[in-house]
Image 1 (tube, one colour):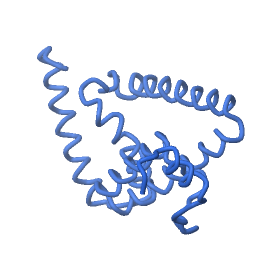
Image 2 (cartoon, rainbow, N blue to C red):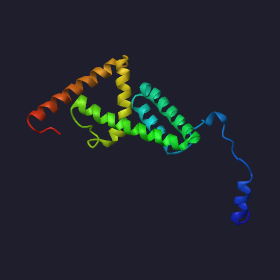
Image 3 (spheres, rainbow, N blue to C red):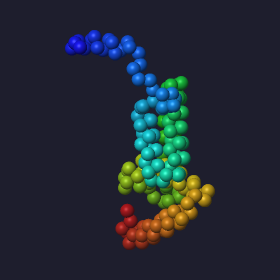
Image 4 (cartoon, one colour):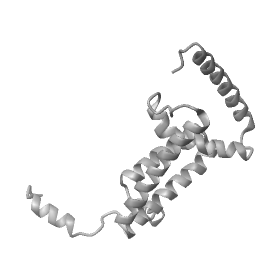
Length: 162
């Protein structure tokens, strides 16, 4: 074996695929890019936190990523414009919703990681709770929420609200 790098690169480059990836491992439009990696991270987190609801949300997340990758291949310029529009509208509605229904700003700076990673799971669980999913969990959470609201109201009466 020689130490001629060009010889080895030429051989490796033109020898064809050395190890075939099984077709069942090849998922169309889930190329290893930043979006797919993020979707896999979100999916893993959701599965760890709430396996049943997380599984369904992970499937939605990965399907959405595959569809986004498909659209990116088909029409990159339009896909970017649609994604940007969706983000802008979602942020606007988030601030309107917090202002109109909660009467306070979103807690983005209080816990940025929670806002970025867990907000989609929270919304998904709210939908599932309305459909009767895990009523015991909903009851425990509702009780704790009422306690936090009472603390917030007491602090705002004293002028110490965050």
